[in-house]
Length: 623
Image (spheres, helix red, strand yellow):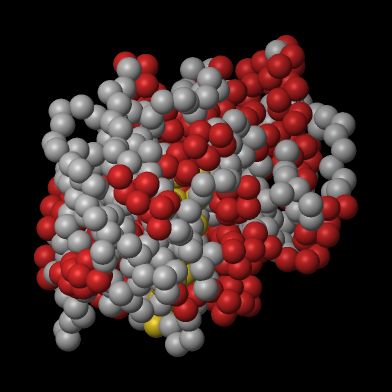
């Protein structure tokens, strides 16, 4: 706080902290939006440097000591910030809960059910600026370390990494963590699945630990993620990494309970993971959200953030946060576009360290990934998918489709005919998306059918197959889709892409992008031919018929809006055969005209919008 008068300071420092024992209801409602891992641990003492300054000021102070209370310092008149108080607390067996949760179900309650998380103390406090003369003492290294044990990390972080099961580092971690620990700004480019989440979280956590952040100091690190699911994943890694630290951490994303987020932000979230739209909302409108002490900004998947229409939001966020000269910035992007360069220019300090771990590789995908395609006529596409899933019931499979309605129809159909699958797309409510996400992560086998909302950054363990039922928009999307398997060092996985005879031109696009694919052969005699039963079912079941019509229309709309129209030409489709794959004996009458907003989007960017959606001003949302 700045310009605080002496009586106010004395009053605030004499105020006794109140600790309340939570009720059972409050304890149950505690959610990981804010979490401290050791709420009863005594606060660490101030540094020797601060103690010496404190002694000098006490010598010049003539304020008498109140009865039963220790001497109170009078702040120098020329100081604009207060040093954090150090309050020694007696250990207690009670944990403080967070009361006053809204009746509306909160997103984090679901996460809390999955993992046991500590909760933060709810003592009354005043926000305090961090001392400007305290900086993390994080030595650099002359040689590139290979293992986490060589990084001279804090004992708490080292213990957490060991419990997470990591010993050696990936290339992006070896090259990125040491300069980040030394305070450098970094612009990083790495393949999906390269381990960059730990590459930016470890330096962020170490910074908070070195600066002795407390809830009253507000937010010290902000991580911006393009999608809700990726934000949830980063939150999970942060939770494990901060298991033994006392700093608080939390998440704010679209679709979650905003009032609950605002309440917890006002109590202090030291490390905050957020999607751009919700973060900007809180920065502009949430009273008590202390962000003036932000010391590090992480922008993950920057190209993806800009692709889905958050360019304006990111510019406003960078403008609102403390100046780039007073904070460290870490920007990661799989591709270096003009927009990414513009964002880097306004967010990074001059002379950032550029780390590219992809340039040495001849292939754009990881070596442990076996990639193939199959040429399939349009009328047998669903039969091949059905046969493939039936033969791999004990495998963990992700199937990508081009639109929300396509995913919805195929999930309804497959579940109806007793082939259980999960669905994930942008039209689902956030609570449903979160439940599905965690259910599939924890499953040993099963099938997830989704749009590209799940194609970027998500770390879903032990995925055996990636099936691209509908081709991607371009080679970059292909790379990110197949990146959901064979993640990490020495990991293995396989991918299969369906191509119609008129789509083989896409293979040359993949070759130019250094993506090695081979043709797989699936004998037609092994297909489970249920075409007649399928057509009968769609003809008799009203709800499946309506869903099939919506899926058919959306498939044609997505095809017509494809960025590679020289390869994916909607006019070359045989609509009778395409309709058969949706269970129709003859093509239904549907309107596939593109809306004006979709045409504008295509003309401006040549790309589609997936996943986390921007404010609907210039973009569009595919049905």
